[in-house]
Image (cartoon, rainbow, N blue to C red; front, side, top):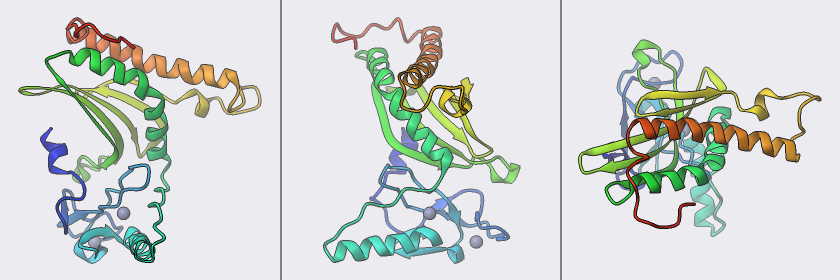
Length: 237
Ligand SMILES: [Zn+2]
Ligand SMILES: [Zn+2]
């Protein structure tokens, strides 16, 4: 809870500290800051750079690439022709977003049911980029997070994740435990013998993929005793 509250957007200005040092190749600077850029889909850049490799625009720190983009956006806004922040060109981030959209309806129903009267549902639509430990050469990950919180903190955190070195594999995790990993059928089934994108067969495959994710989550919630905590009678779907 605190992590999200502390990292809200738009509030604080200036430099947002990042752990692990500057991301720019060949730069050994250990004091680094996060790029504050968030695209129109709410995917954040999250790249870390030192003061020499970042720039302040409008009081916020951005990586060099996004500093230029934000300058253009600000200029456009001043001229009364506002533009949407362009999408980050990143396959892993787009895959998280794509699967999150399909997963969300079924997941929201479940979270509300598991929350019952005792817990609150947290849903942050931002796709966040993080690199857990650059010192140990852990690679970055793009994540979308949903959570249930009780009085003493999280009772469930659901993470949908794609990691930099495996940009085609979708990982579903809960509370730090990986529940499922799969390359979605629309990526793995490329070729003439497979359903063409947009066909009813392709839609069936996508639905089956989402159902697999929801099924492992249901099993996990049952093991955690969440599924048995009945909500107040109400719409179940
Ligand atoms: Zn640097
Ligand atoms: Zn950036």
